Amino acid sequence: MAAAQSFSGKIEKEKGKLVLKDRSGTKYQLDDQDKAKQFKGKDVTINGSVDTASNTIHVQDISEAAKPQQ
Image (cartoon, rainbow, N blue to C red; front, side, top):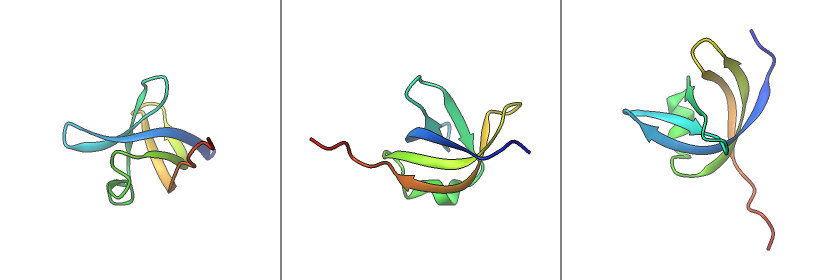
């Protein structure tokens, strides 16, 4: 299993599943749809490990991204 990493992006619905779309446009499948559903449409940070073969993040935790100070 890969080491845990931090991923940032927006939770979006695609083909009936929630995915993480990062700033570069890369989309990652999420193995824990229940944790992700409360963040749909929001910018988040996800901690977890990625399975590069399936481009799936094995979610450890999700938190809403901090809003930039203005």
